[in-house]
Length: 268
Image (tube, rainbow, N blue to C red):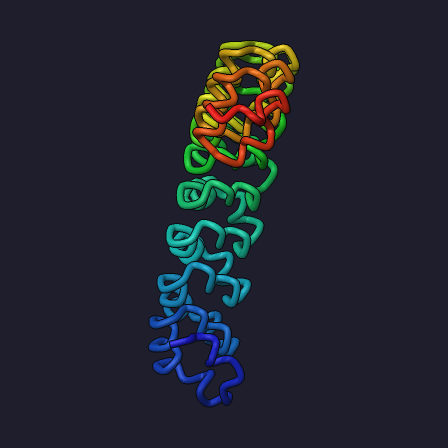
């Protein structure tokens, strides 16, 4: 049942159409051991990529330029776009199909399509991190970036500088993944509403807050309720605050190591 076992087969076996068809229907990778003639046989290749999209890598150059074959492959497995011909990596229909299956397939599209708003929007709707592969001008498109960070907060890292200063974008990102606060502009790391939203999602976003907010009782209490270890990043006065310290160690006993010495001996 391992199609790769066909590799190294005798020329008679590798060129036996019926045998190879049966093999690729079980495991598309069997195409790797087929004869060059069969790697260029559309029915054989279609059967292979219908079983496993990555079998496209073993197809002939002509088959990797066949729209039917490539669409079948990327519909099943988006990353197969990397094995398509340059012409098909520049085909809107093909790339839309690929990013609909796996947003990060955008990286294998041509530069022109990585600058196509509809294509990039489809990619980030599947995986926000596809923003990494968008043309620079689209990383400054607010609607598109909101779609990306709304799905995957970490995509904020790939937004334009202007949008990393945008409250709507940053709030959306940190509500999805608090630690995305690290990618926000410094001005927003001093914004209490944004920092509260971040630490509420993940207490470990506290290190990325401004110094003033690491010393803010509301912010630190919110952080340590969800993650006691966030106490390590609180201001000195709050690590000596009994309520804050108790909240932290209740959430995670190991947070005791971050409690101020003055409270270490307190057994209440």
